[in-house]
Length: 169
Image (tube, rainbow, N blue to C red):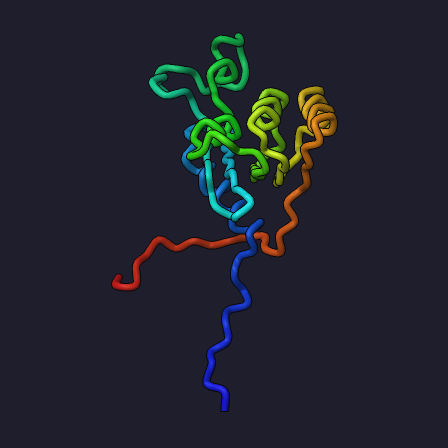
């Protein structure tokens, strides 16, 4: 009789795991309207960088505006660092060549430049809600030209639940 215990079959795939890390990272964002996270993974399936959208270090999020509308300098747009930029800047390696980035929202044109320049060669994104905008169309044009692939996340799971309770409670 075989006494071996079979392994679990409902474990997370790598795509599910890294996208979940990106979405969890997004929860660190203090932006009241848009929370985006990013996770960079290398070919060995190791996390080498994470980030979320927020202001640069030393720039108080109590002083700078979070507005989406109004005079440009009174909105968040000239101040916020996007999740992709932060994930690259927060990486534990200077060489991201061959890595892939998981992100909740398809990258804007500025983040796309950073992704291409860093050597990341694949983007896995959850939402492409701004696909019709010139910024995202420019992103896709640059990615296609540079040979960086991109695909929509298509994990089996629609939800992953975390419970922050220890066994001894």
